[in-house]
Amino acid sequence: MVIDDYVLSGFSTLGGNKIVDAHYHSRTKEDVESFIKDVVISGEDTMKQRREALIKTHLQPPNNNSASRNIMNEIYRITGK
Image 1 (cartoon, helix red, strand yellow):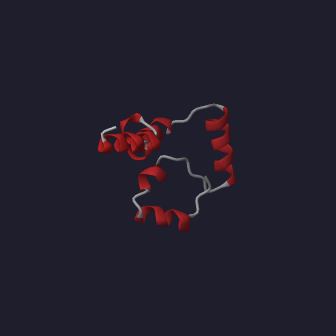
Image 2 (cartoon, helix red, strand yellow):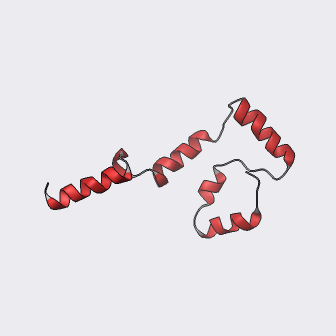
Image 3 (cartoon, one colour):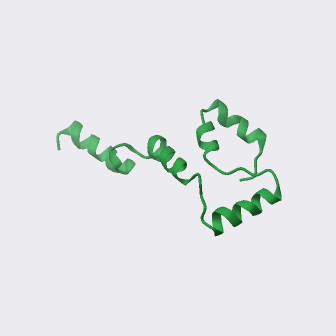
């Protein structure tokens, strides 16, 4: 992504630095071209595992279920059905 310092400043106050740091940044046209060549075309994504770990720990719903399945399971648990 092309860095916009103003936009990124909001992430630090929300604790989003880990998410921002797990993505590629670019400040120039050359950075974008390098990203496309190295990551998109060549598939050399050195940050992939880092992003996947963040997804698993911060974004994926618990119990490896979808959010709707977790809600239904909780309704069933509470109602005894």
